[in-house]
Structure formats: structure tokens, C-alpha cells
Length: 89
Image 1 (cartoon, helix red, strand yellow):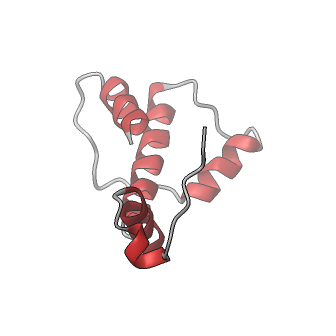
Image 2 (cartoon, rainbow, N blue to C red):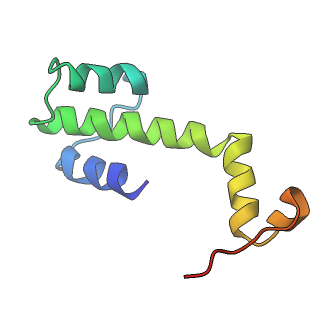
């Protein structure tokens, strides 16, 4: 979450965020990068990259899997998952 926020901050360079602008799909956006159709060399592309990641993070936060992970790391995981064995270093 920090990286997209930092990219937005530095990518804007004092300009206002265009929140009504459509944010591309996460997988489609990355497929375009891998195919070489999209470069992250420009500030505008970096800003779009940050917005794609921010959107995906916000969607992921609402999933049951994320909520289960939070319960697990908060120590309440035993109630949900039974006995949890800790790994020894």
C-alpha cells in the first residue's frame, strides 16, 4: 500500500488526481507491461500503475481471505483455525 501511495504522490507533481478516470484491470495492465506494450518510464504511466495497485489493494482488503489473515496474525486465529504451531527459528 505504501508503494502505490508514494508513486501517486511523486507522479502527480502538484497536479490534481483525476478520480473519474477509469482504472484499468490489474491483470490486463500487467499483461501489457510484460508484452512490452506499456512502459513505466513516464510519470503518467507510473501514476496509472499506482492507481491500478491501489484499486487492487482496496478490493483485496474486503475479501474473506484477508480477514482470515488478520485474525491469524492478531492471535485470534486459534479460534478460527484450531491449534496453530509456531515455527522455531
